[in-house]
Image (cartoon, rainbow, N blue to C red; front, side, top):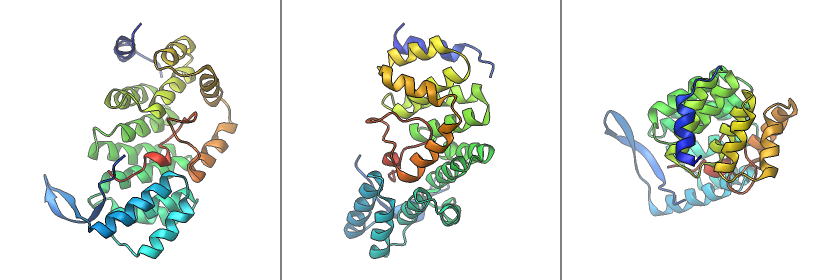
Length: 252
């Protein structure tokens, strides 16, 4: 069964269950939403460097660069919130994300709040935040994939299926969503479908075994929190399940 046919079939069944456009302060309005103003070239360069450092999982270094740059734009605050979250400074990260939900990076701030809640096993709160993020960024594959994962952890498997399939159709290279979809199949007892998906999306047997184990082992929760904090999960190069990897958290 080819990939597109498999996805359409999954949708029909009933389950039981990058270049960085850097932004500055947003004061303009578009369709009633704030739009970030263009940053200076110097600020862009500094934020691009912070984004690269964050993408490498070096959250403490990112905080140091942000302190040195003394930037106060929504993009800089969002990066700081990401770095604080990745260094387990949850309260400070939450305060910053909340300050940004009405800004020009509001959708990404809601996403950050969802990630923060999921890290602390607050699954219902995570789904609520990520639902808001998906409404503001409806065609962002990463947001929809995160929302799907949070729904799966909350136990709403049918809604999780829809979101994960949406994420994959929006971006066929979203390995995180693909792996999470396979995990959903395992969690709902559909091992043959999980195996077929792995074959369709060229998931190695080694990675498939990792997903299979992650779908049921309690120890996975501890490992997941380590991934969230340390930035060790890089979708396209390592086995990656769970929520958004730091490498993909650049400001769009």
